[in-house]
Image 1 (cartoon, rainbow, N blue to C red):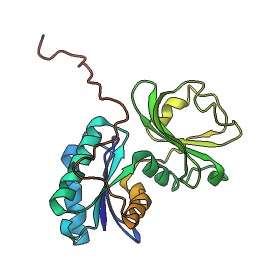
Image 2: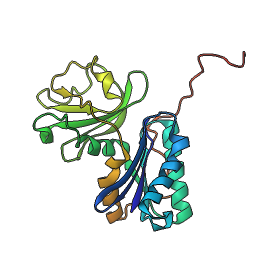
Image 3: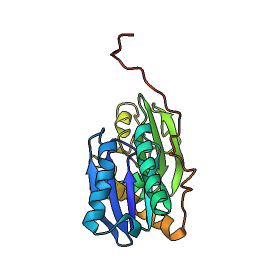
Length: 233
């Protein structure tokens, strides 16, 4: 079994998977819950499954891009468990696991398997992290940070359907006039989307180096100045 941690966005999600699928899942939509709930969810899931950390085959974590703080929490916990229990660490591209979740949407357009899938993560202001995949999960555009404007997706023909999802997709509705854009309203990022990439990595023994692995932030962290100076300085 593999414990999967997803903390790249406002969702705190933990899944326990084996070769039959996702067995257990815990999630919270409270954007400030990661530090408080992540280890609790892990403990609850392991207890419900009747196993201990030593029984795991590996520990998996969503590696980013995404929230700087969220990624740090998830990766720190994953590395701590993997190191302490001498288990391999698996790192999964956040946009790839988002793609896997999107395939389960009930709001996909007709012939969705011929469409392009575009997972988008809010990177503040008009910027998003996004990648583009075909219906089989092949990468057509590697993940990058870009400012959304009227020319976004201009390299893809208007005749091609594009499915936009994630907390960054809403920015596109008023800025991109391109046709054939679809926004599944039932999408929510989840650790359950890590299942297929994780099982492939486990079978191929594609593991991250526990000592040196760092989250994929994509861009440097920028501290913002509080709107109210509580110290009066």
